[in-house]
Image (cartoon, rainbow, N blue to C red; front, side):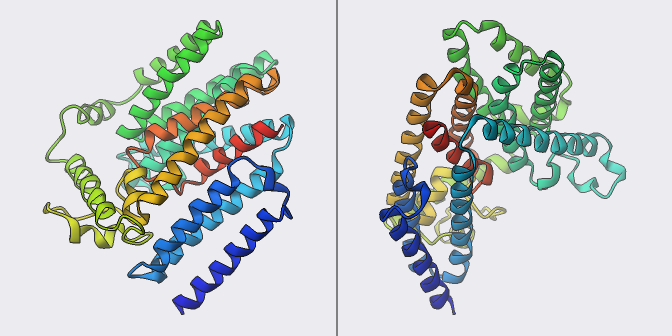
Length: 364
């Protein structure tokens, strides 16, 4: 049964590759599309050589769905109006998640969400993914909001992005906090270089305002970045995940242990008395290397490098009306590159959405 499913997936993949090469699909001119196809093809090898092909195939289908999402976004966003539509949609989604999570964090103890109140997780019910999503939305849309002509709508947008950023911090995610800090430092160069110090300082002020209202639990958790809390166990577990994930990649350099097989293979490579509580290495790069091998990791890094450099180039050459969209995509990618050291984001939908947007901005 698993062989027939794999055979079917291969046929679909070959069909996509053939049509890209023959230029029968409108997205054949999209930057890096062939590199993405190579990435998916190499990943398919880890499915074929996996000890549990059924499980690996299910995970691979997730990547095919993300690729379809990539294609849809590329074909949909072809002008400034659709960029604006998508950014407004992101803001609304972030706001809904923010209001829901803030309410549950402060008042959820008496609701059915009582088990989710230690860390804000929104509708995702996963604090780390929630923090990442809210962080990337607030960062990517901030410059767009500041360029809205209507003062009332602009002030409303600033308030919304602040609420979204605040909810991101309520996730108490250390990785998100570090990635946000890196993204802010990176963005400061852009604002100061373009004579927009007031905008950067205004954004920094909003962050400070958000931090003022952050509960003590946030600071207690952030403190464990420098002084790991042994009783909490999260830091030691993640260290074990990363080290053993690296061992997996070295032991199986070409195909990895199998896509989606990290949790099952963890104890085989572990030298620590740690029980795995997650299905990934909590590190995007180690996770790809452990499950798929070194070639997949290399292609992924090359892909990220090319996408980021092309996005920066597009920002410099883009129409002034598109500059704030281009920079939003750029800062979202920088944020993801940093957050990837703390979470397996390679199959995050919003990450692939911004990969697609980075391709569209160059063609508009």
